[in-house]
Image (cartoon, rainbow, N blue to C red; front, side, top):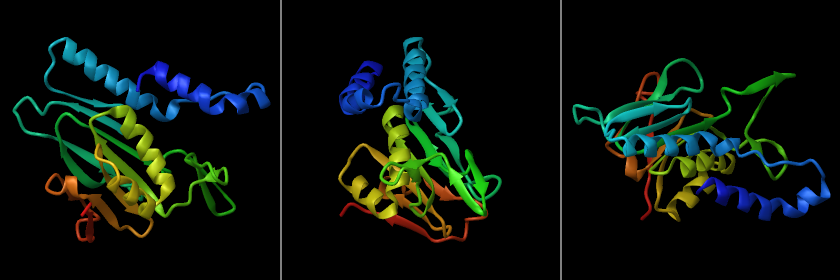
Length: 204
């Protein structure tokens, strides 16, 4: 997507609502980092760079592999503590994670995070703690990480099976880790999840 396409889509989708509620605006912050990483990768390529790793905080985008030819190793943050729950080897891909563990507040013993389910208009309660999307396009990955977090594992798995342009890593509230088949051999569990069962989703 280009910025112009995103803006035109927003106008068409929310046009009636914007007229009804004066002052309402659409915020494209959910894909801003993905858009930025795409632009930076293009800039690097245009200037002859063949190896780079960009980290925009939850959004990692690799250009090629390491200078020595090996893949970049990207840690997937553990939302329940310090460190990582998994490590991923990548080349020429974006790795973008969404979760409710960084921007939230607690009130009366309940946690409210920033990822909103549009149906009830409340923080998403999908049973997932973290969704990581791996793909070629930073904007697509950025949008999907949030959308699939809201969907929950079953609907997200069905969405993945109907697609062909991304892979995913899911961590649920019980500590179970599920990955899509394209990440077999490139993803490994880290402590304290090393002994956890790893489920692989297949299309067939």
